[in-house]
Length: 184
Image 1 (cartoon, helix red, strand yellow):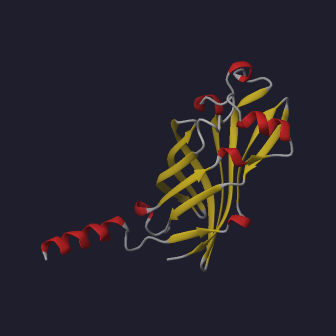
Image 2 (cartoon, one colour):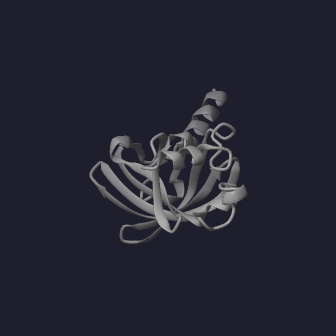
């Protein structure tokens, strides 16, 4: 009987009672990035990604988001650039078939403004990232829009002839526009 009580206690601690779980509507959501390339903005999106989100504005202490990204799914209007980005000097998708953002701390700033803090992993390199975002929740639907600026060189993206900030800037703006539905 004691064993059952310990298991029940452990299970109840793994999922907070107030956690709100969300299911992303991938058809209406986008995860991408923009970087200045040859003095012009270059934008791309990832078509393969999944997000596991527990978020309740009234219980930020238990909020979390775990986003897995398939870097090989990167697509832009420039297929030649895409091929290079997936190659050894870019995301190196053969060696590193997954990227990940794990947000474990959320802060409410004011109104609809929040900040997520977590770890971004690209090419096996982990770096802390802060993602400011706005969030509107109406009924069981949430809309989140955020941007974070990272340095591609911090993750080993763009080595060799691409290591310098010209023609490709070091700063990359990661963009998220996410629509989700409450599942719990």
